Image 1 (cartoon, one colour):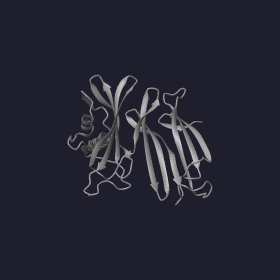
Image 2 (tube, one colour; image 1 turned 90 degrees about the vertical axis):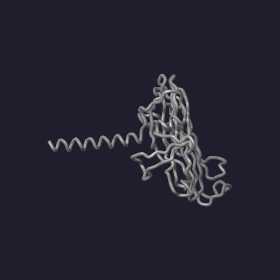
Image 3 (cartoon, helix red, strand yellow; image 1 turned 60 degrees about the vertical axis):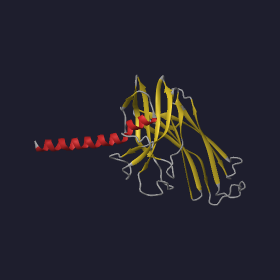
Length: 266
């Protein structure tokens, strides 16, 4: 009997822990009646909203980092219609509460990004997919750019553009984020711009220094036969000069969505 009671206690503890983690990660199923507004959405998802400061103060029980308390701002609200249903895709950016007078502004200070998708159901707005701790992206306390992207016929996702530079090198990446089955998936990521070479001038001549190179590229979406998701066409051009006059090589690769991510087309 004692062993059975002990087992029940352990199972209950695990269930509570899992629930806490789920609530700190997800807002799925929460709903609000009436008009959709940023403030009401933030209050629903994070439990409170300071109308004077235009932010939520959030203390999750479990986080992916040591910080426990955050100031959360609504970064973007992207309304759209998908298959006849009105939706709002909300992006939030959170910075840890700190007593540092300089704030959260260091080079490696990347805000915590949250993603919440609302769906209109009759007179209610219901959270269809969410990830309140999607990941830390950006620099100097500022989030990266996001844009709404058509990822299929009547289907939308997010495109996130991140960049990083250090010790003479620079790179920019594009990430495709897809809401599916109540979550947000980082389905694809590729570097679309970059450079390398220490002390290379913008006006360095072609072929003058072999250790200097740069590249740029594009990510285009194309209809795909037999798939509800578009294919991705990635074009990359390589240069021997930062002045980018003529590429010395160009590659074009196609990716197809398979299950949960984009894979190189065979």
